[in-house]
Amino acid sequence: EIVMTQSPATLSVSPGERATLSCRASQSVSSNLAWYQQKPGQAPRLLIYGASTRATGIPARFSGSGSGTEFTLTISSLQSEDFAVYYCQQYNNWPPGVFGPGTKVDIK
Amino acid sequence: EVQLVESGGGLVQPGGSLRLSCAASGFTFSSYAMSWVRQAPGKGLEWVSAISGSGGSTYYADSVKGRFTISRDNSKNTLYLQMNSLRAEDTAVYYCAKVLLTTVVPYYFDYWGQGTLVTVSS
Image 1: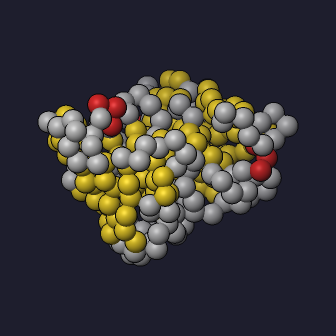
Image 2: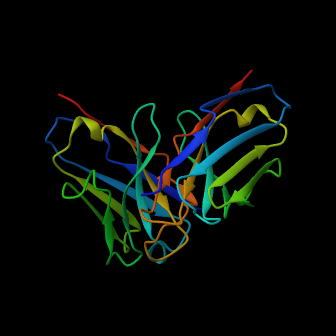
Image 3: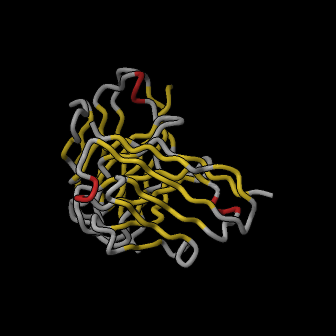
């Protein structure tokens, strides 16, 4: 089974600053990588699929890049509502849901 | 608007049973595969089970195989998870999640319910 890792575990950022989150797969997942945002007490929300395609309604400040084993989620200018936990998920190989451990973005 | 509303969670003793439901609306339910994903308190996301749009194919994580049963009633637009022989490590918020395909293959989840909490404790 593919193992997903994310770094850093916690990222402290000031509002208006840029945030860069990393996700790594233990073997190639091509571009079959999604990113989710989860706020406390809420369900995950799909942000990015296909490594770089924003889901419906997701602001342009969120962008994804990468392929193979290395992926990045960038939030260009953090807004107050962006402080949350972010998970990556590979969907290239079975089982259907293999998630990374998450990166918490908190206020610096 | 797509809506997924889970129910049925609660406190249950080890070895007990519980059935979760997920009521779907805003899309043609029978056209899409569905999954259950859980999240233990303070932990990450773990896929639990999946079912095809027709209900003819079902899949389970090794951690729940033989204890949990996923099913769906397309006439009622409802997904179920029957959980038997519950253990303390099954304590989690259980989410139902939709994918964009009819068959169960690895894919991203485009909509999630708000979750229902299952607590297994004596």
